[in-house]
Amino acid sequence: MAKKDKLTQAAESIGAVVGRAEGTAKKVAKAGEQAAKKAAKASSVAKKELAVISKQVESLRKQLYKTTKKLQKALR
Image 1 (cartoon, rainbow, N blue to C red):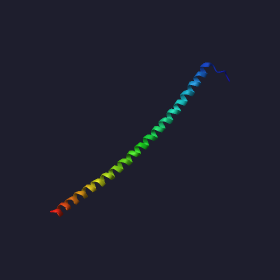
Image 2: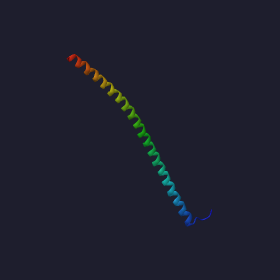
Image 3: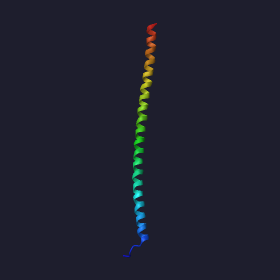
Image 4: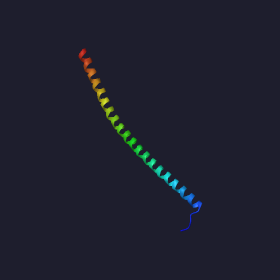
């Protein structure tokens, strides 16, 4: 095998550094994607819960209105 010259050694070390940087970048990107998925899922759950709570509030508002009417009628 031929002896490696300085240029080849430098290219190998640069390639190794670039490879490590790419690996780290992929790990960071994957972690970011997972965090985004979790946030989207949490947002979806929050929207559903908000819809349920809104329905409950509307139901209670109607019930309060009916009760108020009955009370006013009884007090006359």
